[in-house]
Amino acid sequence: MAVASTVSGATSYIYSRRVVSHVRTYNWPPLQLNFWIFVMLLASASIMGVFANFILIQDQLLLPVPWYFPYFITVSGITILFIMGLFWLIANRRLLPAIVMIGAFMLFVQWLVGLIIVGIQLWGPNGSVQSNCNLHVFDVNPTGQTERTMAWLMQRSICQSWQLVFAMALTGNIFLFWIMIMAYQVFADS
Image (cartoon, rainbow, N blue to C red; front, side, top):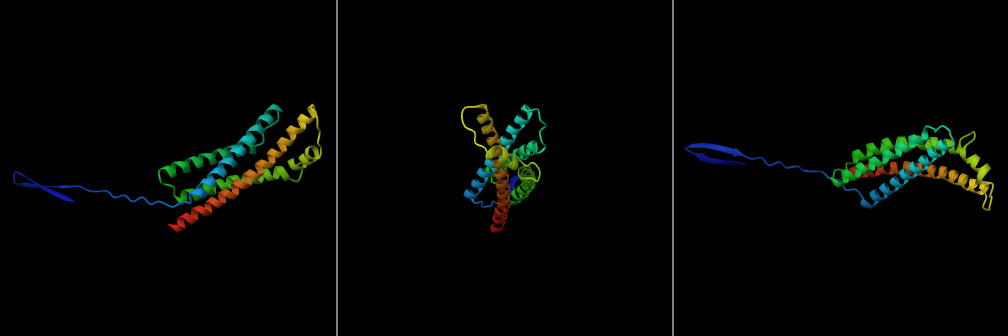
């Protein structure tokens, strides 16, 4: 748009340019996305809590900490950071399906490694956690207010925590795969 003005016989033009920016938005299904966020936060926090407790137990028993305890704590922390990043993108209306697909795929691979190692430890061929739990914990049932009963309750809690970690790792992998499918559908629909 040009505006002409005349000053003492000379004509000058002032040009103004209007910048039009069109922000493409994607329609994410809000209930599914919120449910996904809730489940992933639940799975990540559960795994972080259980493995942090296991590290404390290993330290108290003066045993070395297996590599997969801090690994899965780190992966769960990265997942929580990813979800916080999604919140920021949602708040700025910039949640792109490509970002979600790439981030979810990277997390899927990391969670899959964690799921495999937890599965090997839980049901592995030699001295697995589940076989030890079946032999020493689930096949006995002490009662009364004794140290033996308290020790058994702690052992049962540890065995059930391993089962929780496996369930949450499996759930996390399924939900990461699901968010990749959801992101593709959001991209295809717009």
